[in-house]
Length: 247
Length: 247
DNA sequence: GAGTGGTCTAGACCACCAA
DNA sequence: TGGTGGTCTAGACCACTCT
Image (cartoon, rainbow over all chains, first blue to last red):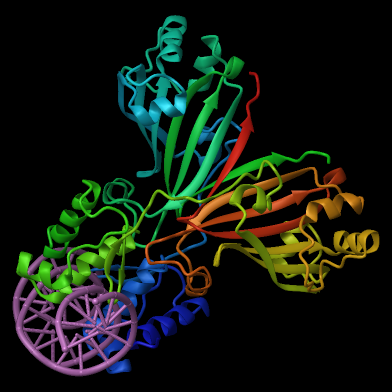
């Protein structure tokens, strides 16, 4: 109930909340805390690790234990406008890079989501959204073969081929290809990043990811694509406007 | 780059992913892993702590290191229907308890959100949403004085007083009080829980919270209330349906 | 009681960063 | 070079859970 490291982390947490140690500053060095509390090194480190896992601080070798700024959400996507309105909401230093693009076949999970048969041809794209030099969102997308072929015919753009230039808005292409999207269903949840996500987005410890699963609906109840968005949780938020019924 | 504990945690992570150690089972005991890798106890514990912070396992004294089931989201709220549709989406064992309800005055932050002057009278409510015996969502709500007074007059229900019985749907009361809500704006983000949230919702390590900030709009651009929803990240998700424009 | 994880120590060596 | 955090050890004692 009251381990030594818990008291230390509680004291430090309160000191941060009270405004000592403002964001960007450092906590007292480990040796200082060892003296102050009369404990061993590993006990202080455990206390600091607790705060790191809460996302409050980031220990950095040679520099000290840096207090994070937890209030700076600089990405603000509004899916009410089609999701990749990256340029609009994220500023001039935002960009998108298509890492992979390929024709492949749907596994069971994707087939279920898109209500197609397993093994159907689909286009899979993996894209990274940058803010400055940092990847802040990983977008994996599956487009039904029907829609991808229609786009290829109507616009001479093949969604399943890698392109040097970024063709921007897939939804515009869908409209030109007679598959205008009518609505999306987006489910938002959260979890901790796996090691590869942590590495790609250069995430400090104690920061979760915001996970969005999207399904795009087309004419006559058809399904056009499905996407998963994995966003760095301390930099991204999503806003929805929900109209309410009268009764 | 390749600390001993990193190799151990990587091995265990892969073993879990491969289907050895299915959800609910336990990892090998610490002494076994010490022997297998020829390392000290604290090294093994660090490896396991890494997995715990990723939300993959929960070590429990006397029982072992239990593999969590990361796929069981049992709460699924649809804000397209007014948010507290708890009974509909969460099953029969869901309930809501009002922990606090009071008339108070708006601080600067709440005043800004509701576009009222600081110090105005508002009603603040703190509610816990249960699933079975567990709190899975903490709801803090501020209702403008105008709206709360109108409800009190029209329905003889005072939102700012504690009630033994749960009056259910605030939006219905608003409609009866001539303040029908027309839309909500909901911003979703994520962070790690603070210690009090972790305690109230009995959250294991490595589980973030899903944070929703809601503003409810009323007739003629008025603002009726604002809420923060803090949901246990491994049990809750939210779904939005977004209509898309034609062009 | 036997086995599990939880806490803590005292000391060692290493990697990183600034001046 | 001196100070920072990062890793690791070998051993101790405690708290919890099941049988």
